[in-house]
Length: 413
Ligand code: GLV
Ligand code: MN
Ligand code: MN
Image (tube, rainbow, N blue to C red):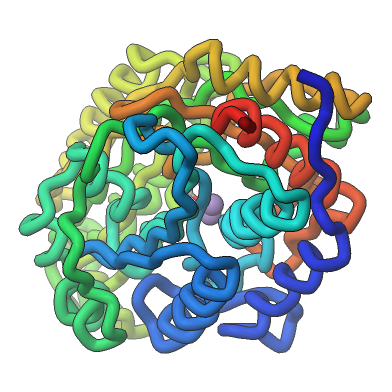
């Protein structure tokens, strides 16, 4: 099949700009944490966009929002397309949102061209992909795919103690549809910005994603003894923050001793009582470790735990270790990868095959149907910051590759 459709570049960019108004920051980014008022506002906008595109909308019990365009074959399994509309704190306007607006744009393009597909097409906005306000990441897709238990995830709380289930109720997005597959799905395709520098470095137009790295998230809480900083001799202290600092630098050094592409990060640190003249009683940090080989991720986690115990022993504090999430590495099957690669070739774009270092809902959906992804170029590889940027021409190229790949999966009649 040659390239058959061409998305409306201006309409796509208008949608991208429109969604970016909900939760816009002064710095040109987005602060749209999962299940916040800004998330509700963009969801309302998304539901209107689905309705205007003639899709039947349903919201599931975990707040995942779907729009469905029927196919010509009532027995055919649907193709699912989408990403997420929540953002990181002071994040970028492309992460997730570009994939959602492109999925809607695909449906509009089919309508404009008068194309029917054999398979139904569904567009989805997954709840809480970012895992920033509520953990873990990929929460909505994880529940839907059966990797996470609905009731357990309802009870997860944010830093203010608000439960997911109450936040869903509050924004009016605890829906009626079961948060699970209603029927077998044929495939899932997600467009996303790369969020790293590989495409730009290679001078490629579009990325054809072949898989996603494995990931471990966890938390270590060190418990020491609060004391007066002026009067307590150094040798009598049990300083929780010193142990946390020790572990932080150990985690930073870990990747160099493991795989070539291993990454490890301490992204959050909480200190109590957080006072200039009290020896810290409690210090809590998180880890995020990723590699495309699951055995490397597992080794890294074992090492983090051993380093936590050693740091605690050196400082005379207690360490509580909690593993929060283990998402296995995913290798996408040939069918969606080939659909994306063939579409890129047919459009005359320069495609690059690559493994995603970022987590995506596609890795959860991959456990229930054939999943694949298309990447757009990220300028400077920047993401999870307001500085995130993908040029209009790159948004358009990736969207066009995605639309033509999605059409291959949905089977035009
Ligand atoms: C999600 O954005 C992740 O890769 O952590
Ligand atoms: Mn994302
Ligand atoms: Mn993200």
